[in-house]
Length: 550
Image (cartoon, rainbow, N blue to C red; front, side, top):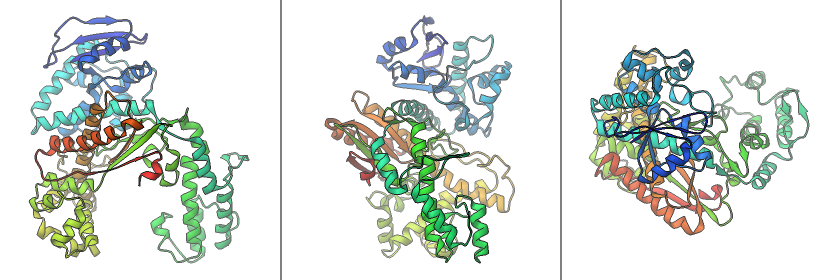
């Protein structure tokens, strides 16, 4: 392991450490940190630093990638939450302060107080933040790392937590690399898609920006006509609700699923407007001007930006690219997009973590729901799916009740697993994923230790947390494993969301990428669950356009 601290001039200091985090050689001051790290990374050390976003973006700008690292901040967040101290400051400075009683400078307070996904700024800041005044930074990093090792070893499953921290640190590297590389984005194809959906863009500006394109203007006029509401702004929920109320339909909100229950000729028009308005504002021409440069969409990804460990982004809508505009994601000439997604991931996770033999046997097949249907639901695939999703998401009453009863009787260990998580959540207990990520006190940082409606809501949240968080761990481990397998190729990891990954590669390497994905999925399952019979198959498409992948 090598601890690294960067300075503002492009240089830095390196310190070799042994496995326990103690110095194994003298410090080395280097004038060109990127070059020094590139030379040493050939031996694949684990780099120790306060946070990926403090050092790695500058290395990438210099053309340097590193194989692996230990991100102290991400590790600290996981360990604090494991101890039931979710939300406490997790910066290297705060960790050192807890360890030694050293006061933390006031300018660290903002960074310390925010959870991992809410840090201000971007991944590509102007340089590393200060650590602690008058404390040698390498001493601080090494001391915090040693303390983390001690706390990690004291946990119930230290090997699992080590894997989680390694996968989380790798995710931070991958997120920075993907933001630096960018997703291929064809402006001409994007224009063609937008024009076909929205009509020609307007060149007229109002005080709030460009006026809507032709198709939105037509729909807006038609909505106003059907609701007898001249001047209505269909993008205003309050105005739409008021107009619908005058028409005899009092709705609680204007969400699509609510509107679909209303019997009025305006509803199809209004739904079309909502869909097209979302595309115009979230992925239209103005969006492209802001986020796409030199044929690449470069968002700022935030690994573990959601409490379940899923990724988030700081603007750009990278994790919500609508199907309608995916045709703009196109491979460069002579290259291909290899698009892979893990089908039925969360139900398979439930089968693996619960060790329910009968459910695991069904999850060893290609279509889990079909296997369940044949096994316990008299061939009714829809009922099997309803039961399994209801068990994981807490939808156990109403129309789902009969199917849930069948699932509870046929797969008792799977049912008991999510039920235990729900009961613990209802009473304010700690709930953990398979590798050890701990659910916060609540998604809203409020107290849930009471019974009643709030307790039941938390129970529904924790019921799914143990599955969704483990699925996020599976995906992070898959990404890290895939990155290693593709290290010496020209292939680029360019996109990831939840259970889907896109690799951009030369045509000649497409088969290699497909094999690497399949091997990585198998290896990931073994790393997390050993010799479980549960399979995690990937659906893989090699294509020139993201829109053609499904």
